Length: 129
Image (cartoon, rainbow, N blue to C red; front, side, top):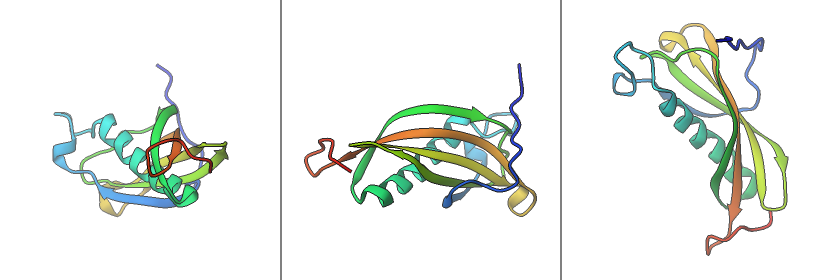
């Protein structure tokens, strides 16, 4: 298995969400479940998409997702997001998750991905951005 490492020194995008990884979110080894991390990334990137579209959005796809480092109980998960591409009714949001180890320590990138959202009107139909 090839291990993906980030060479970035700083997160890309704006801080969209911060939360604390708790014991209930972990497996028996103490690592936080990937699905929990992905859920936080979906929320953070959706907030970015809503800000850009000024409307309701839904997640249409996760185009890519890379897990780089584990998240541990006690880490502060920080989600950064920025719009990469805007189409007629959809947009791609680049999203990264970084942690502050043990709530205050070293900042480490743990995941990155591209989430695709569709803007919706009041009836729940795709709307022009």
